[in-house]
Length: 147
Ligand SMILES: [Zn+2]
Image (cartoon, rainbow, N blue to C red; front, side):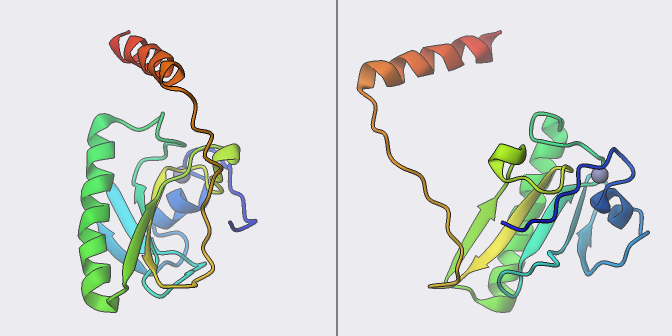
């Protein structure tokens, strides 16, 4: 993950300034709720960021409408990346919080064309808890969803 971190407040972060046209960007798409532009890190050619137009830090801060709009734009951009760059793989990545590897604290999703041995790594150790533990976790989440 890049070392650049931007946790500026609403209106001052790099994506807010980009949405306002105050910093140069290679824009791919704009609509009422989303903006899509080339990631300056460009891990592979065609690497795009889809962000909410409104400043909201994480997935916990966006509205249902913004969530749907970001996924809609990301899917359209994914089709465009596939048509324009023909990558053999495609990864959508959305990070929240420092510990979640978020570096710009304005909600965004990466659309990343993927190639074999492209240097991207995302892995975690499988812990395989017993089924009763999984059912306990599921019950906690059902309670939280119902609240
Ligand atoms: Zn912002």
